[in-house]
Amino acid sequence: MNGDLAAVLATRDASENPVRVGLIGAGEMGTDIVTQISLMKGIEISVLSVLRAEHAFRAIEIAGLSADTFVVCETDRSVASVVESGRMAIVEDPELVCSSGYVDAVIDATGNPNVGATVAMQAMENGKHVVMMNVEADVTIGAYLRRQADRAGVVYTLGAGDEPSAAMELINFVTALGYPIIAAGKGKNNPLIFDATPDAYAQEAQRRNMNPRMLVEFVDGSKTMIEMTAIANATGLLPDKPGMHGPNASLDSLHNVLCPKEDGGLLSQKGVVDFTVAEGVAPGVFVIAELSHPRLRERMSDLKLGPGPYYTFFRPYHLTSLEVPLSAASAVLFGTSHMSPMETPVAETATLAKCDLPVGTTLGATGETFYRGWAITREASMKRNAIPLGLAQGAITTRPVTAGDYLTYDNCRVDEGLKIVQLRRLQDKLLDNIALSFSSTTYATAL
Image (tube, rainbow, N blue to C red; front, side):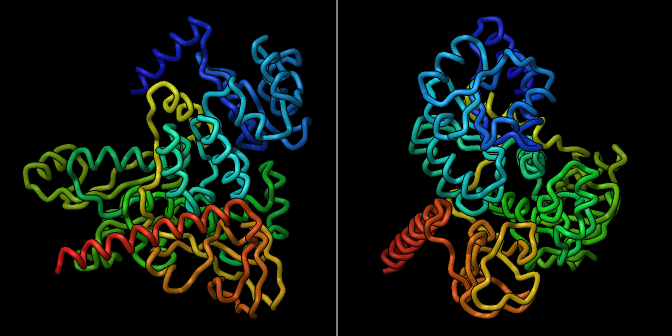
């Protein structure tokens, strides 16, 4: 499909009919996208939304684009005029991106779950395809957004290049060959320190030109939990235990560690999501598959891939934001998604307290001081009445919470004014109705 995509983009370029992208956010990831798309044929950013115009100016400067390639706009009419003149419109209001007739697909690169929820709904209501880089939003309301996209006749997709979608490529490859999946996941490229806080990582973040909060979201494991939940909800693979195993397993030993206990591994079941903290796997992703047929194992042995029955399939890289434009192009040109959630989620990124939280504590963002993500099954989350990580920001504790305990609807009050909270309520109600309908059908059939 990549060859076809390149050819179609070249044709769109030759006919001066590019795929037009609306981009929300010009931080680290958004700047990457501005730069990447500037190098591609047949696709362009027509409208860019930023909270402060200087962020857009900086992104455009880094991309090497000249000052005459963009104009700051405040109305739909001015956006239309600028895009028709062949330039990029810079706006503050994301709704101007989502409503523009000069945008085919909207990419959310904000990293804010509530903004992601709002942008996705506005875009789909205006008939735009949605590329969600905001995995935090996806694991919270992805099932609902997928349904809304189907209803609107548009594509909802996670962005290519992130670890979940990179792993999905391997999952699709292995599944198409008919090999049962034992485990799928990633290498973690930071030390795993559950109680990490931004203050301790300020200097490292500055060296790496990162927001300290975003760096801590990786270090404390929240991002890994979110990403593995996204894979689970797109495939049906499950966390084998709360938080997964996360062994220190090298690439050569992965298939011997993330395999069933009866075969010397850690797993209590087949078909799981997990990760390794060993060096040499990150920034790659992996799938461990079972090849039981002796003929196939004979061939794998000839190919120097081992005796089996478990084999590691590995992609040694993911290009994060650099691959995301491919998702926008594929959605517009082929109506395809690189990765999207199933209708019913199977896992949840729950929320654990990093420290003791007294009554009345207002929770900040993921990667800050108060909490971290923890991947569990949806069934376990429902039993605990756990608050999804994507709803934690702005929540207020109503009971004391001890460090390491789950944040739940019993000890916290979420901010009902947030769009993502409202959409999560709708998703929960929808899933409850589906479960009730299934239960009634099963009962009637039994009678």
